[in-house]
Length: 146
Length: 146
DNA sequence: CCTAATGTCTCTAGCAACTATAGCTTCAAG
DNA sequence: CTTGAAGCTATAGTTGCTAGAGACATTAGG
Image (cartoon, rainbow over all chains, first blue to last red):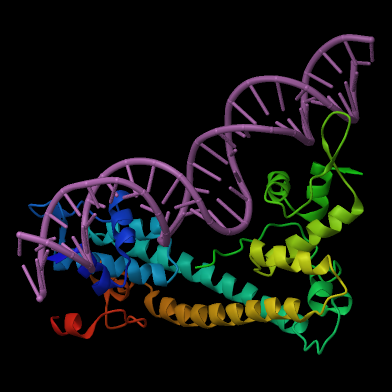
């Protein structure tokens, strides 16, 4: 049995995050020691590793919750799990496309300003330039900084 | 002079977001009409477009705050603005690299599961598989116990 | 001119997914 | 047996918005 600290170390997850996962029901309530401290089995550790890995892959906690509830019923068809993964892949591909465009624009604006003044600065200029802006008014999801 | 709704429409920013930007000091306090409604000049509109564009490029509000304070003093060297953009570019490149790796892994796990059961599902399998995990946070002594 | 339908106002609370703080208790090493 | 690390709970803060309530302002139609 592992204490929460050891579990966190083993799975690469911070201690408060583990308690948070328990709080939101992603992890079951942990067993407790005589002194009320959480104790974890190897199984709990695997569940946490699964979560952690999925988070690294960009899955939301909601998607992970679905995946976990699926994996708790291994007799069912895996179509649902597949759908979740496919949606995730589509999302990643869209993010990739936007980031690639973005990188091009950033490269365009990063220029060596050997002592130049801001009035002539391309960084400011590009950001203020409306004509370079895709003029549709959709609100693209700006991904959260991880 | 534009009302907040027209401004939002013109800049592609939602009304509550504009008020939020004012609240956190990214936009100056707007002039008010006789009936206490916010009124915006073309200049304010440009500032908002600048913010919106920078947000689209993934800049944080803090970075934008810096860029705006720089652009308010156009006589200074543009080195600082350049540094912000460069940091942003590095961040974008790192995100791109991670997303690309991620996409490969997702593609690996998305397989046609023609009626397969979850017990054999690659999605669950890959997410649970520790050996496929790129970022290894485990400590050697813990790993040895497996 | 009146009314109804929008639009705007402030304020508060909520979202994801944590992270940090305060003030305790428990545990393991020396 | 003592000390310091690690654990506990509870609450509040973070980023960048978004949504709701209830009241006032403005505008278009009749």
